[in-house]
Image 1 (cartoon, rainbow, N blue to C red):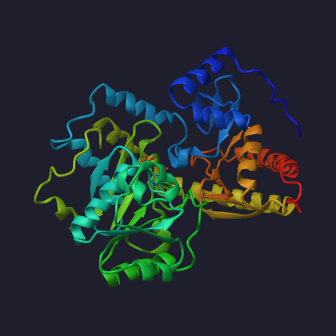
Image 2: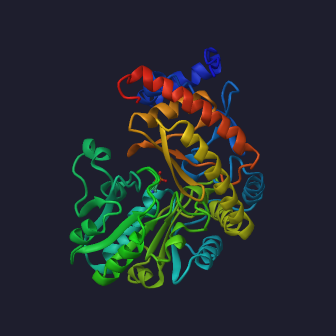
Length: 428
Ligand SMILES: Cc1ncc(COP(=O)(O)O)c(C=O)c1O
């Protein structure tokens, strides 16, 4: 189906784009212009947002989980408003009832002795702190991460990521090693007596929703135990119910030494991130409890919101619904795969953590553009463009599944046509 995408942007939108070009990022404006995507976010509610000119999109990206509970979740907004009548950021040097309460709820919802939480503002900061704890606790320096994994763009998190993200920015922090995700032998060869920690996303999202091979995470846990290495699981995207269990690592029956949370913990409203530690690890702060601080980390307003996010996400009915929706998508994506088999080759899925597996690396960007043209925000995985991430809000209406599938079907047709234009010898 061809659609009229020729509407001229309003002056309001044009002005926003010009100001963005002149004062935020000329490069981003150039990229979006190149692909004919003049999207500027305007109104937003639930699973949808509208661009400044009123065009509606279904959010199948959710900022990697920030909008798990939808845009402008009404209950969380009411709570935030009430909280503003009473609290502010608080003082990060002092004891805090609200940080204590949130940390207690997290500990209750975590298995084993994952009892302590250090709060941060963003995910990268929370990852940095995990590396600091691992080094202080083990007295070792080296950190192993997965090639193509992603843990943020702050100092140490950046060093644990792929070279392309750090190359222009000068010398990288020493002590980081990368191995292919899922390759236990490579990990075993890289791990030595100086390895402090292994960090993995339980389901690496930027790597294309890579579902770990059978027994991989259990074997990684065993290897870490055997060699005295700490295991850090980054659940910034996979946690909080996304996979149909509260924590993705529950699918693999393992207990990590540290867990990283961010994104969705904010309820999409107030930034907060967390590094959760097994009880013995908290000892690294005994000598000097002020050795790590974060002015806005665990801001008290955000603690209230995050606590409610956790209560909502942990509820049995909520998780049952995630699993129900996951099955609906699995059932409806299968026939699309048959219909568009020269383009859509598979579905990577754990609950509503989904990735559309495509024929080749050209397909991800093409489907992203075609989906945009059909009112779906869906983005290819940056470290594996052969996969389009498919991450609906967990609170989405089940009635929207059919509507999304119709749009996706049309988008797949368009993407195949685009592919025939841009790569005529590569369409089979
Ligand atoms: C798995 C994962 N870890 C860490 C981060 C970094 O989080 P932030 O952007 O809040 O620093 C991200 C962000 O996309 C992420 O997806």
